[in-house]
Structures are given as C-alpha cells and as structure tokens.
Image 1: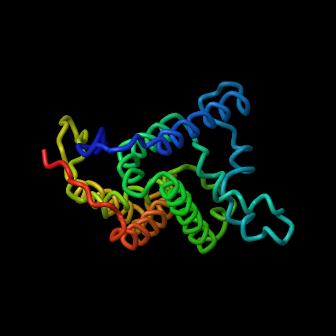
Image 2: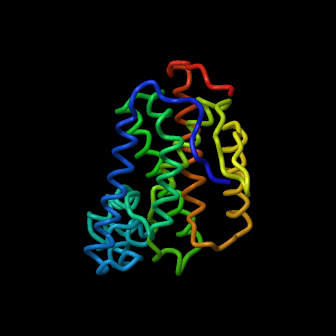
Length: 229
C-alpha cells in the first residue's frame, strides 16, 4: 500500500515541508558523492559518525564525546539508499503539507524534529534493552519524524482520502484506515520480531509522540473542510 497524494490540498504553500524534502535529498547526494565514490550505497563510516548509535549516546559523558548529543537530529537526515530516501520522502510529501498548513510553518518544523527525536530515543532504548550487537548499530532515516507527521494527519484530517496504490489498483482510502493499518503493521513487525533492517521502534515512538502532541494541539488548530470525494 503506497500513498500517491491526498484529496485535501493545503491552503498555504508548505515551504517547510518542501525544504525538508530538498535538504534530505541534498544530504543524500553528499553521502553518495563524497563518501563512497558515487556508489549506490552511502558509506557506513558516515553513519557511525552522524547516525544514532545507542552505545555512544549513553556514553556521551563517559568518553564518547559531546558531538554524540546531536546525533538524534543528524541521524534524521541520513538514508541508507535511494529506495530508503524515496519511500520516506514520498510519505512526507503526501502527509506533511496539510499538517504544516494546520500547525503553521514554525510549529510544524518543531513538531517534526520532536517526533524524530522521540522516535530515535525510543529505538535507542529498545536497542539498549536488546544488548549487543544492537547497541552498536547506528539508526538513520527520517521515518521516526514522518511517523509523527502521519499521526498528526490522522488526528487532524481523519476523513481525508489518500489516493493509494494497492496491489494492481489505485484507490482512495480514508486517512483513518490508511494510517491506522500502517501503524498496526509496524506493531505487528515489531512484536513479531521480524528482522527486515527497519527500525520499527523509531516508527512507533515517533508515531506515539506525534499522536500525543497533535491530540493536545487539536483544539487550537483551525478546522478545515476535508475532501469527501
């Protein structure tokens, strides 16, 4: 199930969301060009340096160094490959515009970063609980932040239809069902211990954080008519 676009269009141009997409793309080009000689997969050295490594984060004041404190943010702008980047940016493009329109530009940026940090710290906690080798594996990607954006979309625009590619068909699905199914899928993979290399803990942590913040902010968000087409 792949989202293509939604049927409720933002009133104002979501330039923060566009900016995030562009920044992620530029950083990925840097990863490929400057760290691995144009190879399709970026360098693991960069991930170890700027990715969120649980062992290093918890040892920030015990020899790991203060720069590790910024890795919950820097890790959000790194991606492991073209498909990783493309998938994340597609979801951000579909869900981010209306959430930015509802929250406002500055608040949306803060919300995005908080959700991403919450997702990263959730994954860190789970990795520490699991022990080696998970505690040494860097977490990267914007999916924790994007999960929070999807949660906010669910709270603010539950009835909006998301035009999605499902199997061989393109069908409109209400956000409530699309996002709800997506989240249940993350829970299923996480609880089932399915090892696909995806940080499901970050998805869940970012989503829960986004859900809480969006629910608290909902009374202060301007209500907009959702498309019922």
